Amino acid sequence: MITFPSSLGSVTFNEQNPTGQALVPGIIGCDTLYDVNLSFVPLINENFAYTGCIGDNFSITLGSVTFNEQNPTGQALVPGIIGCDTLYDVNLSFVPLINENFAYTGCIGDNFSITLGSVTFNEQNPTGQALVLVSSDAIHFIM
Image 1 (cartoon, rainbow, N blue to C red):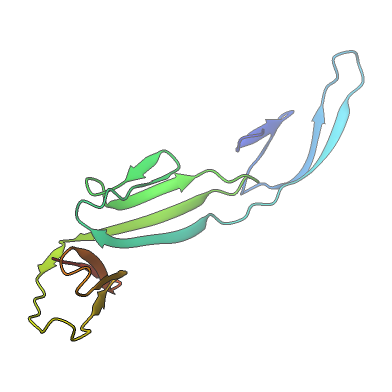
Image 2: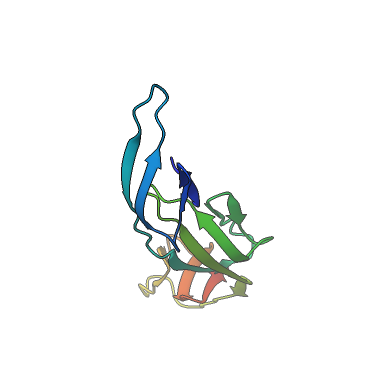
């Protein structure tokens, strides 16, 4: 892998001098003339955002930086596979879990049921807990 700026013979090639010729003296007497044509592409910028609950243990590692509740924002440079790096702007938000109670009093056999999240409560399953996604900004915990 060539790093930049890079010299070939006595000529330095970089973003300010991306093209030209360089004569490199040979070890056994034959010189080599190189035609150089470098292309540079801009750094790729990406945003990564996440909203979850406090204590959900979410973390993501980008490059060598781990983002989580203790390190929720910042930038991470991820080396590219084909030479173009990506700079990520990271913003993680953690909101508190909201506790709510639901109570129903009815008659035996009235066929009442309610589904909260993925849990159905009825005469056969009268108590419990359910996680309900209310919006992309908060998760409610129902008891």
